[in-house]
Each structure stands twice: as structure tokens, then as C-alpha cells.
Length: 195
Image 1 (spheres, helix red, strand yellow):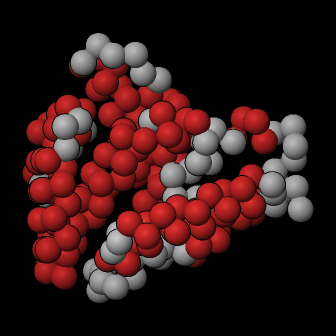
Image 2 (cartoon, helix red, strand yellow; image 1 turned 135 degrees about the vertical axis):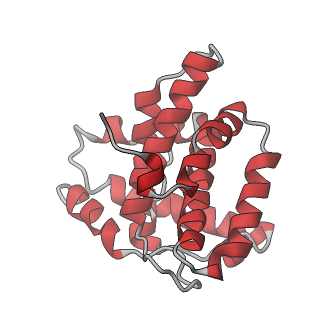
């Protein structure tokens, strides 16, 4: 059917993340994709306005909105399995590509060229490093929030994700870590009121 795309997209809220972890605050891929898009937009702005490189933050946000879209059909495969071996990673990549193709086919033909780059196409590939960093930052924020909620289930994931972010050569991610992550350690009272 070439008119089911947005009905499928609305189902992102039914796909849970962190399936092997006990969560104080369950998260679905729709929530995660929103936060990833917000962060990807910020990384695009940082790339353009702080580091003076050509970048369209709006394109970054749009691509990030769809970065896990294939999981509507595949589900969220736990990280220890997804990255267990190069063979599994490659096989999962093929499954994701098939899911993107199937989901793209649920759009009317006239709309497909606008969405194809966002669903595993050229835009996803070109902006891969920014979207991957935004994805990791979103995961790190989730870990911080869980720890702050008294859930130590995420402590190992928090350490590993922070280490991966710090090991990244992406200056935009380092900038975000330095300037914005400390605020996630604050309470609402510590953040203060607006005005």
C-alpha cells in the first residue's frame, strides 16, 4: 500500500528501547528519535556556527528523525547482539536496508524522492557521523537520567557510552558534551526558572 507510511511512523511509539535493561522510565524509539533529532540539529548548528563548516541543521534534524525508522519492522535489536560480530552487523544492515525499502514503498510514488535520502539513502550516509553522535548523546542522556532516578542498571552503559563519545574525533560531540551535558545533572530547581 502506498499510503501507509505515516500510520507506520505513528507505531514507533510501540517499539521499546533498552529491552535487556530495567528502566525507571521506559523509552520508545519515537521518543528517542525526537531527542536524537533535537541533538542532531544542535550538532549541525555547532558545525556551522562554531566550527565554520557548511552544514544544514534542518537536514540533520530531518535525517535523525528517521534514523531508527527501520525498527518499526525489525524491532530494536539489543546492542550486544547487533554489534557482536562483523557478520551479524552486516546481516543486520541488510535487514535494515530491506525494511527502509519496504517502508519507502508505503509512500505515494510522487513523495518517495523526498524521503528516500532520509531513509537510509544519501542524506543518512552523508550525515552519518553527526547522526551517530546525536544517537550516542541521546543514549548517554538516557543513562544519566536513569542514574539520577536511582537506577544503577545503566551505570555500565553510561560509562561505555561516555568513553565512546570522548574517543570520538567529532568536535561537535565534544562541544555538546562540554557545554550542554552538565545541565542534565541538575534538578529543576537548579536549572532555575525562566524569566
